[in-house]
Length: 413
Image (cartoon, rainbow, N blue to C red; front, top):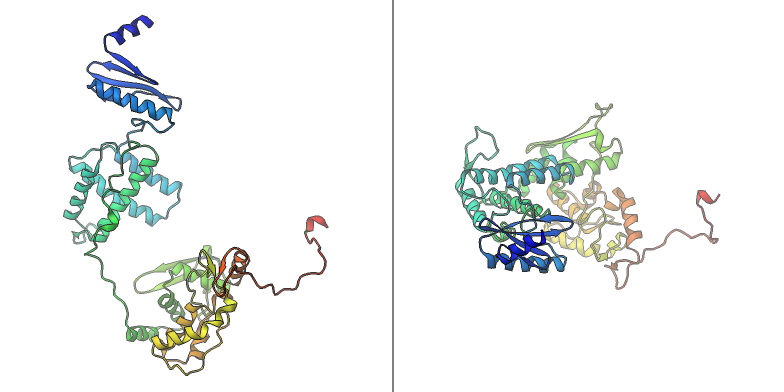
């Protein structure tokens, strides 16, 4: 056996570079090596010198414990898409609507691969194929809502950008699973999607001041707090429900359903007491500001107890911005944030009410989420910079401490 190997080496049909052996089969050179306990034998080509250079490169990579240049699992793009969607559904637990959008976006890529002369595997799909896919997206016409009887139209720039971003995430998933060559680039990342100009997009229609006032005056007692919260805070229906259920504590989110449409939003109970509304029409909802659950940024923490120190300047700012009477009496703004002061001023401008009367429809976040605020104060004490004064934020200890050090754990009694 040893003599046969020596004869093959002398005849020029095999060579060795460190941990890598090259063998000639017919007119094609193959490299053989072991990586992570498994035997690899990739195909190189007919050129012996290129095979030796590749063998030297793989030997150096194995010596430095980095992935070898030819060690990856080639996969068809359709199979990669199936694994990626399965990962989002069963591992990442993405929402149903998100998975549907990903499936519809990647379907355009499969349609392009089936009709064009493009490679079907991840290893051979390059930048030039991604650019051809972009040109394909610019030329097709699709129904805007996916219905077969809808009138087709060209894809908008936002839609093209979303499809390309989804394909970029698909190939990034393949790179992490080593379905692409280790030193190959993501073909969709090279396109620089973030720099693509958006010239065609759906128009965004906003209410004017008179339209907002007319809309709120047409609402009944049940619709008014709901749509007012949407207009002032931009919250989603699910978030509005959590705020409302926190006021009444009548039902849990599992016991209700929220349905939203361009013309209405409906909250219905699905528990045994479905005939009773989960929230009261007279329930006042707050207007949470920046980061409603914490009120803090990553490095500074403003305490709501000190918000009144700068509250007067915030009042004057929004009174001048909304053209309200600057000399009118201000409501009690204890524990109010700047966003709640703005909500009160805007409500007074919309409904032509005094500030004191408009403040009756604003509940500060310090009341609706007092437990969260207290937890954040405890966490931020000694960790964050104070936004009201120089130095580290220290929580004011208002509760008197016991004179004796008594351990009140039940396990010690």
